[in-house]
Length: 284
Image 1 (cartoon, rainbow, N blue to C red):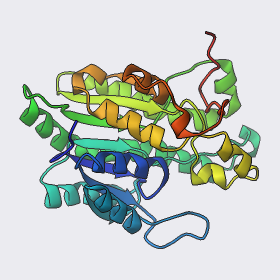
Image 2 (image 1 turned 120 degrees about the horizontal axis):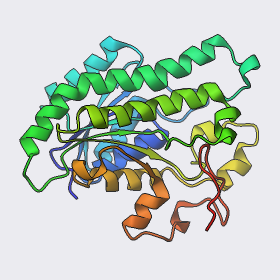
Image 3 (image 1 turned 45 degrees about the horizontal axis):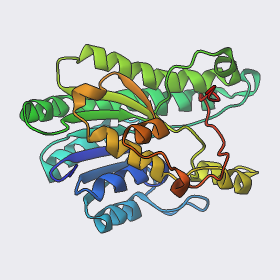
């Protein structure tokens, strides 16, 4: 589906999965507002929000950078105002910004706990809340038309309540499941608004800087899929009518399988890519 005249706001979109999704939409003609803190090059991380916008433009979309922190209400409001000023509305929100710390509870600092809650849960709440009036207008404008409608896609996992995951890193799990619960809650709260609230999570590790910068990063990257798989899955979800995805949590490979893509070798990861957190081994 063409994304021409659709405007997407992405948090944490200067690199990695957020940028990949922005580029996937840009290749279909989307307008993209990227909210990220990286205004200057980072010694260990590639790109800035400005280079990300250049990539969006080169891919065929129209990009605008907003240097800001998703934890700050005024920065989030500025991102939405920028979308309105440049493109006249907001049709899609991608809650991508996230922090991770998996230390055992007795070793996890309060600072890291607060950071995860502030970015993952508060940031998701702030951006979605600020965009809601405009998403509702978008949904109303497109109601009855042959279009995918308005969407809020949150990068969070299905609720896997296995003790394995509950006990592995309770604080990080709380923050990510908090994002999922917000999405499911909004899907019910705004069930009649015509907005598709859904979640997307990778089946396997994704070869991002977060993986590369680990001590064993080289080996992990070899067993990780590229961020393109998340971009393609996101585009597939955002191309569906919003009512058909509302309240659902998706795994990237399953989305692609439903779209007829079962050969995932192009995304890398080798014959046995590493399963991501919250994803269990398949039994069949």
